[in-house]
Each structure stands twice: as C-alpha cells, then as structure tokens.
Length: 373
Length: 166
Image (tube, rainbow over all chains, first blue to last red; front, side, top):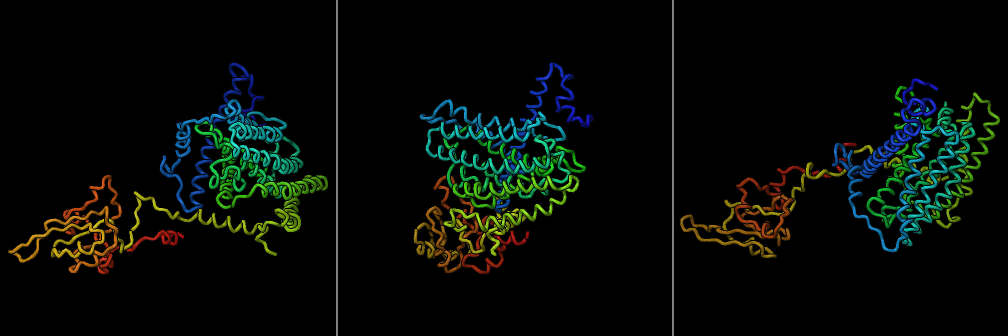
C-alpha cells in the first residue's frame, strides 16, 4: 500500500491509529462525519442534476432561479420541507411511526463506511465488504415497512408490502450477479474488487452488469420501477402520511440509495477510483455521476411497470439469467488461463445477446401472453 | 424478427430523450424573455386616434357589451363634434372587435398589450387620455388593419426556436 498518499494516511486506521490524540474513537467520529457530509452533499447534487436533466429532456429548463444555475435549489427544497408543519395522524402507531424514517435513513449512511472513494480511502476496509453492503442496505426496507404499517393507512400498507416484495424478489438477481463478479475478483472487499479490475468488469460481465443495474433500480424503486411512489399517479407510497422533516428523511433515503447504487455500480463494474491523470476520488465521483445520468435518462424515458410485471421480470427473467451467467462465469474462470481474461469479453457479449434474445422470445411472457407488450 | 420487443424500442425511446436533452428548451423565461405576439392580436386595450375620430358614436352603438361610453358636444367654430368623454370599461370587453371593424373613419384600434392585469376593477376603465394614439405609449395591433400588421414584427413561435437551434 502506498503510504505517502495523504488520503490513505488519514483515512486508513491501520496506518495511523496510534498518532491520533485521544486515541482511536476520535478518528472514527471525524471520518464518519466527513463521510456523512459527503453523502449529503452528493445527494443534494444528485437532486439538482436529476431536476435539471429531466427538465432538459422534457424541453423545459428546470430550476434555474435559486442561486447561480439554480444550484441552491436542493437547499431551498430542504428548507421548505423543514419549515412545513409536521402532521401526525391520530391513529398512527406512534413509536413505529416515529422510528421508521430513522430506521430507513441510518443504513444508507452506514453502508458508505466500506465504499472506497480512493485506493483504501474508506472508513473500514472490511474483508466482507460487499456482503456488508447487501446486508445493511436491506435494513432500510424495514424502515419503509414500518412507515407503511405505522401510519395506519391501507394504501401506505399496500405500498409497503410492495416495497418488501420488490426488495425480496430483486435481492436474488442482485446477489447472483454479484456472485459472478466475486468469482473474478476473488475477494469480498470492495477495494480489492476495484484492484482486481485491470479490465473493468462491465466488459467481462456485461450480462451481470445489466442484471445488477435493472435489479438495483428496482430495489431502490427508481424509475421505471417506481410504481410504489409514482409521482404522477399517486401522491406517494409508504410515506403518504409523513410530512415535514420526517418526509425529508424519506426523501433523503430515496436519493441516498440512488447515490449508493451508483457508487456500487461504479465500484463493482466501472473500476471504481481507477483512471488516468485525474485524482482517484474525482474519477470515482465522475463515474458515479455518469451512472446517475443514465439512471435519470431512463427515468425520463421509460414508462412505469405494473406490480405483476415487476415481479415477473425478477423471477422469470433476471433470476434464471443470473443463474446461467453464474454457471457460465464459473466454467470460464476454471477453464481459462489467468492472464487471458480478455477472451471473456467477446464470448460474454455474445452470450449476453443470445441469452437475452432467446429468453425474451421463448420463456418470458408477461402474464403468460395475456398482456401484449 | 421484430427487434422492438428485444430492446430496440427502448433504444429508440432513449435516443429521443437524448436528442431533447441536447437541443434548446422550448420554454420562455417570461419576465426576461418576451415573445412577439401575433401581429393581429386583439389585445386587452383599445387605442383611439383623436385626429380621425368624428364623434359619430358608431363604436358605442356596435358594442354588444355596451362598454364604450362617449359624450360629444358640437363645436360650431370648426363645424365638427368635439369628443368630451370617451371611456371604455375593458373589464367587460369581450374582445369581439366589432367597434374596431365598425369605425367608418379608421380611428379605433386594438392595442397589442397583453399585460393588463390590475388589482381593482375600477383601474380597468380606460379614459380617452389612456387610449390616445398620439401619446405614443400605445402600440396599435394589426387587427383589421393589414397595413399596420405589415409593419409589425413577425410572431415568434416556440417551434421555430427549436428548429433554429437544431
């Protein structure tokens, strides 16, 4: 490990714990705070980018009045939401209702502890990093279910049930696509996954990338899988009874998860912080912004799916393809020599195209052909 | 084999949004940017040419709403009617244009103003000083007067803005 890199020197506790005044905990508090601030700032940037980009894609301008180029718009949004009256309906289950936004929010921040913003520039270089991410980020679903249940509103309960159903269904394709990546990287640590990507895994594992991207979008219920929130049709999903600061927390969860997903895609498939010339953290941020651009692009383009289509896509399309991809990757890793991984690029692209065409032609029928797509 | 079902349809949709992303937005930032209105707009005010008006009251008679109030007196020296009072309650005006069309001397025009919101109904009543063509504050629109219309700038269309930038 390069010791003269100041970021590593500061962030990696193993290199510097003893020198810190007051001991070890001080270090954790400071860098946890830095991570949280970075996440919040990025979330604000994401909100701004999403609004401007969707505006331009709909031939509008988007927010451009608050500050230069409307850059202060997210701050204005936050202030507006914070100043709103916080209404608590009479029939709510109070402890659950009050706890839900926090249970939803905390995992999103906690997950960023293992995100390598630079080489080793992470709060904790866990050797089970990706497992930790998957496990912890699922907890925020409990917060959403608590919100849906606690607000004693049948519609929010329906939405919460659908959130849980979507997350449970899409966890399988996500995990299986990650598993095929782990076969290549040989480590669960996110930093080691980045280090293993001399060729970005998006080239070696295109099918895995597609599955992870789609399933990730569905898990964080972003468009086109945002039928749980569906701004245009229903007001909101599980957080319909929330207002004021509690609503702001759910909003933060929503975009924090989007940031998390784009960071994960950057780390796992786009070679994370690796890149020429520019500093490492800038490469990481740039790549995650590109991923977010694509996500918003899809948001502006795709029609929303129904709940049965959501479920069918997970179980009948993504899951079988992910299993096949895992088996194929395992065979490739066993048979191919270690230094000629590039052979996987054309082979896997061909396999991806054939599998998607074949599967959508032969096996995947929404509602068994009842519904014309 | 119809590839629309296997991703080509999505690609087409994505290309549309991407094209929109790179072209000029078709909205106008209103208070800063203003579009030229239609040259024959029936604006919210009337413009009155004092020189041409003979006080014949044809406009008042033709008005279906009866919002034009005109009082004249005879001027024996010049041998003509003197318009003493000319008031239009634009709050009741329906912009039908009959007064403009009926004027036998071409002394009445629509103005091309469209920002005429007021806080009180009483402010909507125009007196003859407000409507005077000579004051220069009022710009007559080309409604019913093609020769005026020919001199006005062409209407800006948002479609043209997109085509120009493309």
